[in-house]
Image (cartoon, rainbow over all chains, first blue to last red; front, side, top):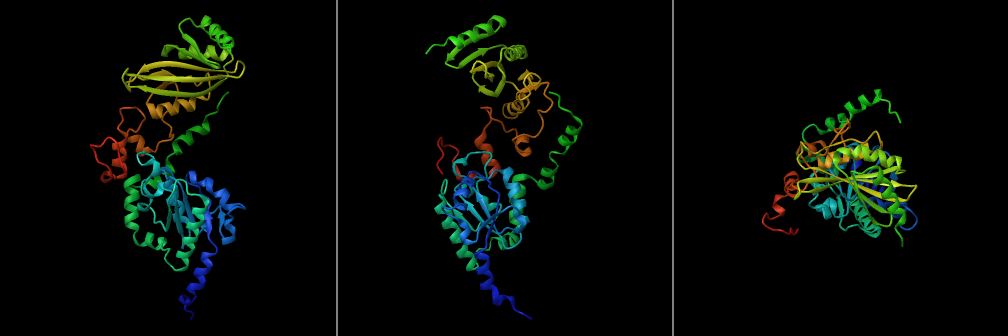
Length: 193
Length: 175
């Protein structure tokens, strides 16, 4: 019988050097991704790759403000990711609302709804700042301190309570069914122009 | 710079629509004021006068006058002129009604949904007004709109439970 805890440092090293990102740009910070991915800052040298499927991703970049509408999708996508998963909040808006502090349509504290591992301040953070955040994230992964996914499991009642307070009970089903009556009617209709 | 082209366009339209008032604002901008019940008639006339595109329907809340101003923004590729068609309707939710123009300009269907969601203007004849649009259901049920008498800040405080971060008696909020 092998004690896999012996291999934990090796596994953590491998995790640190192969972070895949969910290709889900939630806000205005998505515009910082092209310079990061292309030749100037080139995050592929750290083994980071944008990935279309959340089922294969480790790192979730929350790029910019989060509206309640996006937050529903973020939570669903986050729960689809396999463990271990890491969240990097990007910019001032996920921290305290930023310039949208009085807007009805922006989340003020993201860490009430999802656990955050690394947060970068700034509006917008430059790609250097994001690289710095990613290096911090790699450091935390190697030392085993990036434990947001464990915190999400342990404190699920807390996060669930906050999510339900914001969206109302049963928001997943409600969101999924929201368009059904309109789509059913639309099939019969032929638009004449 | 001469405004001859714009004045010609305004004159031709006003000849056919004596109920409207029109003027030239500057180069490439003209403006019409019409009563709300004749909006369909007037926009049909504009479409015949080579105003091919509707660019936007804007609503302005004039809370002191008790009126909502709808601005239909029309663009003509032929004349290269942007026309503002302004009309005023009462501000009360039951009376804020105007006929839909979606059969004249099909794109108006979307803009009317927008004006209905954020200014509660009812467009008679547009059956998609209640379709989900930008607002979430819980916001819509709470009555969120951009009318000036809606107290947005207190709604935000209630929704996100951030009451402790602001002092009620301050005019300017400091975070």
